[in-house]
Length: 279
Image (cartoon, rainbow, N blue to C red):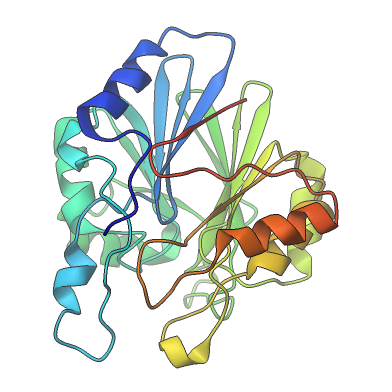
């Protein structure tokens, strides 16, 4: 039995549309795994969406089956009026052709934020022109439609760079109006991230909690304790956990994160699929 979404499909889109004229708040929906939709002043930013079963199909007959745990929140074909979509790195649950190709097709004015190091790979996977994406590196930024994206390195499982020094794995601080959110992408803890992130006064840190278990044969992430402690270390006003409850072999119990956050008085918000967080 799949974990049910709070809202999905047309009902989710209707909720987003009903708030499109809300000038006083920003809204964030969890789409599953590390995917979020941010809406502010009627503008929409799609962050690392994975909205297909491509990995379940790919690994079905292997020793690493990606068995889905949660309902699909929304089909990518339904997502319209998207200003920006981002990918933090090249793993399929963060750069999925079956998700991104219909989104790029249906949103003709969309901009695409990626790590500069991944440009050729991205263009080949999603069948776009090589110069179409906006490439970022750490200590670089880009402004798209009143949203400023700041590049932050990610360690997955190392901080990898190409021959030009560009990060292959990244997170982004997204600044819009008076708000700043941090989407870490997939990352382990590294000390430098505290100094990079603390000056931003992050309103919401979107952090993975599935941990680092070599037996899974995939690159690891922060675990529940580390996600709570990172939020505390950077003075995040909220931590929103993600990257769990998608695949049975690579998940975590979000209740463990709740215990760790409450232990150190770190504010948090646990979302269910299709659930909204309002700033």
